[in-house]
Amino acid sequence: MCAKAIDIGTSFIVGAEMKGGKEEFRTIRNAFFAMEKEDFEDMMADSGAFYIEKGNQVYIIGEDALKFSMISGNTESYRRPMAKGILNPGEEDAVHVVEQIVEGILGRPSYSGEVVAATIPAKPVSEELDITFHRVVLERFLKNLGYEVKIINEALGIIFSENPSTVLEDGTTIPFTGIGISFGAGMTNLVITWRAKQIFEISVDRGGDWIDEQVARMKNLPVSKVTSLKERKLDLSLPKQTDAVMMALEIYYEELIRHGLQQFEKYLKTSNATVDVPLDIVIGGGTSQVPGFVQKFEEILETIELPFQIGKVVLAEDPLKAVASGALVAAISAEKKKTRKKEMENKKREEEKLSSSVTEAPSEE
Image 1 (cartoon, one colour):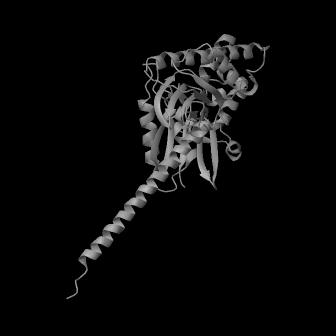
Image 2 (image 1 turned 180 degrees about the horizontal axis):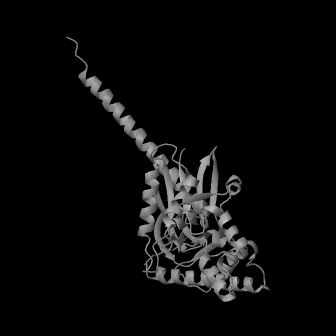
Image 3 (image 1 turned 180 degrees about the vertical axis):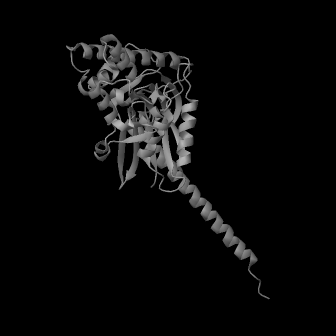
């Protein structure tokens, strides 16, 4: 079954497809480091660096971009094509770089019209943030590559990947039912589903980047260094943070979770949604990867009054890849639907052809 998925995140872009009956993923950090072409050594290309050329500059893409920024101390040349979950309006090369990363991950379709499921943020709480341009640009680009595009909410991808369920009073289990929350770098997204049907969605324009920016400002450090320290050393399960940067990261992690849950509480109470069974919460996204995240989330959740009962809180098996994995489930489902439709159309044509030949057969005298 041919189908692909792409989770276009602010910090990482993750692709997924089935090969030999198993999921295969490719992940690239969504960042680039700009340098003059004359400074780019051929040995860097020979060593496997992912890069693109534009005019007199070379853009080093992915993890190497962060490493170049850290080693050189040059933070101005370290650039991010996305911000707050969408294409960065302050980065003139945002569209070009994201398109190159996406094509590098997905490649061309196996056949014209192969389904790719791509993720976008939910409708933002902030009226100042609009996802229309982001969605249209990415959808057009994927179509131009030759794909049939299916767009889904990134938090819905977590639901499809982890398959939470609820149990009715009569013992009936309802699959793909629960609350999915994606804690990404740019945004925090929430979706509520019933039998895989999305019934509520919302996003808050704070994520892991917001944490990094606040800590960098408080501790007078480059954002890229804070990001690196967070990804390598932060452990929220520790009873006490002794390092000043780790302490600041913990404080802003707590604030990120609290702010997101408070916004969800506010909007859920105005949605008129009525749920009379407990719903499990499934968490994913790169920002939720740090040890102790779920424990911290549960502590803060106890202070929030949601309009329905919560069951258990579960971290996705692979938080960074969960969204792409769920998007692949959606893509495969869409491919199967296309195949069934095509088979029915072919069967109908054969029946019409057979009926026509019987009608036109000469009668015996």
